[in-house]
Image (cartoon, rainbow, N blue to C red):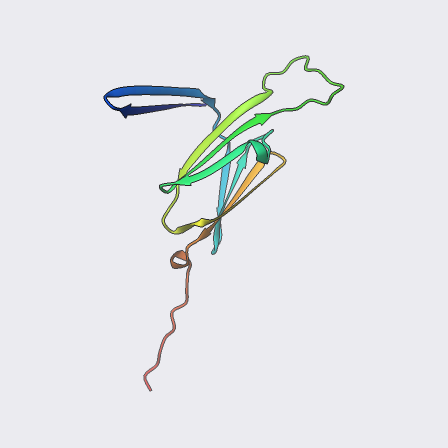
Length: 130
């Protein structure tokens, strides 16, 4: 678990903001020739409660999970009915930050980030002397 702490200084005043604790979701990252794909496990998270931002090469994922019960059920014992997730990554300049796609299904966030053309392997043509 992490706690986010931000300190700002404005007009000789120092402001410290501490937000609630957040769980770092487990993440798997895979790579192929064209893309980097990230899978983050965030049970109970829907697209409406998910925020993904990119700023200054920093990818930030934040989400609030809410485990809903059926109308005819009530919790007898519940350790975790709500959760806050937060995770951030520094993106390489070899990734195209304008080509990021996101989807969430069954509590798994999938982010697909395209590689820039300069980062992709290419074949060099060999010319022969005529």
